[in-house]
Image 1 (cartoon, rainbow, N blue to C red):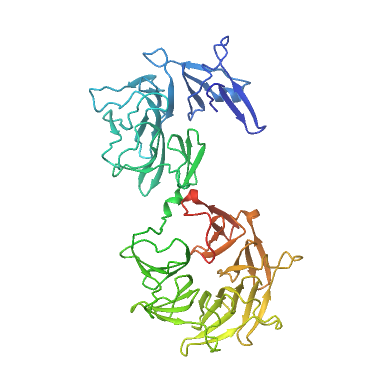
Image 2: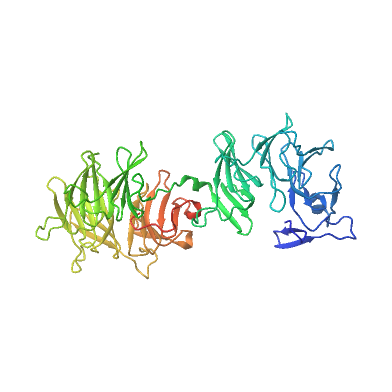
Length: 569
């Protein structure tokens, strides 16, 4: 560890102790200077140290074999001393030194030959600045140099060095080109890989973080926005590290450490923009559904129904019109279901009844509660929809229990909750419905646990939280139920984390924040093709692997639009 005034520190992981190396004027083998600006450990286990007094090095092999080893001074040719800002060993073993005022030095350690590259105002193919702050060799063998620094000089941008031609290509800020380098003071370079091409992350001092595509010579900018917590925390970037998991760690001046996940680039935020008819109609999104044409339907709470047409990348809005009886009955949408038998039909559960949309004619048919008609829907608050393998439609309502709709007649059969009947559904409020591979129907309730319906008898078996039984359901508020390939049921609860129910044993296994989940309040589960579960929670998005029982969490810092997901999402 190199420090600004405290010399060099070596940390021993075995005993968690630091050993300090300092300048001792009476010892010619001590550290050259107590201000350390750069470190490089070469493949032969030599530690190279850049200081304001020049370069020194230490053979770590000698330290490991004996009690201690001294430091040796390496003078740069032709100059008395200079501050060495960076030291780098390339794949051939060549050593490169970037200085604050004398450009770039290269040392062939086998021959002992030195070469100096300095800025020549009359030569456009010379290095663009004599202040060299960072050096990086990419996977294709190209050498990249960042010039300028945080305390001295304007900077000359990014340089690519062609060793065969012995010339430098410059990439600098052009105010008239939004895809040019954001700032000419380049202090850090890291590399990712996309396809067969190498891509670079460029840390600038004043321009934030840039993503550079060498194939197109275009820079894409990531700047700090004080109104958006998902942006980088500072535009004064001083260091970068891309770890083995693809996470980019960003060191900045005055704002500590930030991280950028490669996963974040996969998130694209779609939001409501007032006045823009091709944006989402409302920012409170309650439900999604994909139809057989591949279009995405989005239900909002207050903005009606949205259709995102994939081919045209455009939105179509459907909202209630009091003057049109064939419009949506209510703009507060709670659930959506694409009809498995008819690709032209979409079912919409709202706070104002059930709607059936004919996608081709754009007309809505309403199913509303009628107190005078016992065969009407039991309640207008439709919280969930499900079509089983027998093509029957099931509805969960806010206060009317479970309903089954006969499509041919338009009549509803009711399954109300009855406290006097222990075989009735356990709650008036039904949150989710699913069918297992055995054909059993499972019903999640708002406050009375999990139910299994015996279709022949019309009776329900109840599964509830038992304080004295750790293998019981962990919480009685059920938000979502999903079956895996092994026939297990995964159950999201709004306070008890994630439950796995094994129907063969009747036992529940619980996973909570203590097991790595982002939150114990889980609103939804989406099962991916690889078997992993995606959980929407009160504290971001969680990816859970049922095989390893490992959780990976994503927040606004990974590109999410918000930490808090909505119920039913």
